[in-house]
Length: 335
Image (cartoon, rainbow, N blue to C red):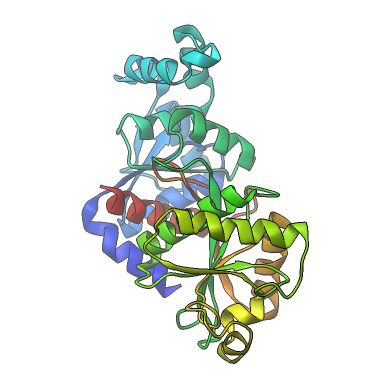
């Protein structure tokens, strides 16, 4: 977890403001206290200030110094309503509906704070399903320019130094799209590279599109989808190395890669693994986590126009604080 400490040290002078909209979750209050103590970003809570302070007192948590924004008396509320109404006008959004949504739904309000630049990022989901967090993010912030797909990546830290970058690998997409199309796989790869560069400082991304086939060793519609994804990336003139379709061992084991795909720049050296579907990705990262004792950070949302991250509802307060640090470094890199 030294990476997280490095990130905290990096962003501490920047004073990034991260909104944590779910104060009714005690873990959010505890995470707020941790952030204030470490001082690597500025936490912003959403709701009635008296109720929030009372909840913190009840939990025995000191959140003195935390900023609170109450939708009921927020000075820029009308501006947020106007922006939200304009964004969703084609879907029938009216100022009345927008105002009601922003007053009642802390996720939408928090995401709109990101949209209008009141805060730099949002971290939520400890008390909400992923679908709710993503819905608020998409409706209020939307996807990054040129990106149609929202997905996720997990950073895997292992003591197997021979794999990836000194034991660090990126797995994608492990949390959002059940059965991505070839075009979506291409989007996922591009977003994973961007995420790895911003957060990990990855200098030489090497992307492998995984399959049960290597370079035509098997044939099926599933393999064809991966091959088509590679062709899609070729059309995009990207500035990173990529290859596929490759089996897992051909992707990360140099001797196997040299044997199965001797002409590849990526085979045996991949540090970003793009899985063909969510089942494979979810199973894969959990196998590595359990059998190799790897540390997994994520899934971290990618493809949005601004940093908004979803948390597992089983997360710890320390996880919330760590993801805030990641959101802060992404916000700093985006400026």
